[in-house]
Length: 360
Ligand SMILES: Cc1ncc(COP(=O)(O)O)c(C=O)c1O
Image: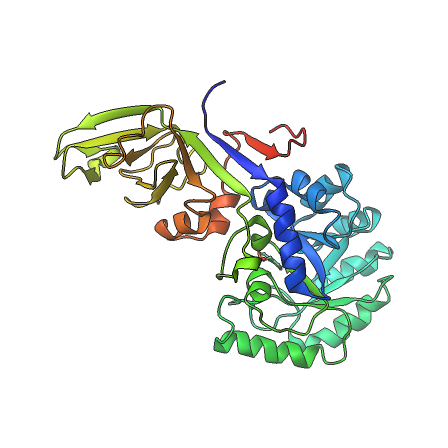
């Protein structure tokens, strides 16, 4: 098998990012969010690498938590969506998971299970209006859940617009949060953007996802720069010269306005490179950035290499990770880096460095 397209996952960069973020976290405990297969980076490999560095993990759904337990992950795991049934509540207790509880249904299931839970997190709706107890209902939920939880319950909420610390929405959420948590010791509000953007919320836990993987939402000062963990790489497989006026790819979207050299790279939307990528989306090479041109195919993308004669068949290219960053590519596709990394497919292998022996 020789297609040179692969995702390399730099576990050392992941650990360095965790160490950097822990410094930003100060005395707060750190929860690593490894849902959606650690944002496409490989949940088991990432959780194993992060276990010595963080205090707990968070996943969205039970299946993700069970897979980590089966792989031997022993740290606490918060299930952000909590149980979806009474049976789920029983499995949560048996697997020593932490449920995040956001509705009366879920409280009922926990009570009916007859189990005791190591720690229960209570999701409060401070303004996202997606999940959670409205502020007036939190006290009763807390009272019912406290007797089911071995450790003190934790109040949590989630920012709807953490990238905008001064927005009215963020201010509204913070003010509701301050009221709700005035007499609570165990609390958690911040995600990556709130932590790196230094929103100051009352809390003793932060929940970090995207930043751990090196995704950048704000420009941090040099010592706090985060390193990209995923690199999407390939090599040029074919080069052709076309006349001015000829088009490239499906629908003839891109038309050469000069005699051009076109490189074909064997990676496409079937691997997770977004079909929405616009002409000009940057692709990295050893000799400089080249513009992606023409519509992305299922198995291939094309780039204009006219200005870089050194590039030829076999030249390595970077689709994202380093130059360009995943956030840069996402901006050319009218999306966010979160979507790109969680939508990579399993056709191209993930290679972990250092090698963990994980097979994809
Ligand atoms: C409830 C909750 N907390 C924390 C996070 C982590 O967010 P981020 O990846 O922006 O750090 C997420 C991610 O979506 C989430 O849903």
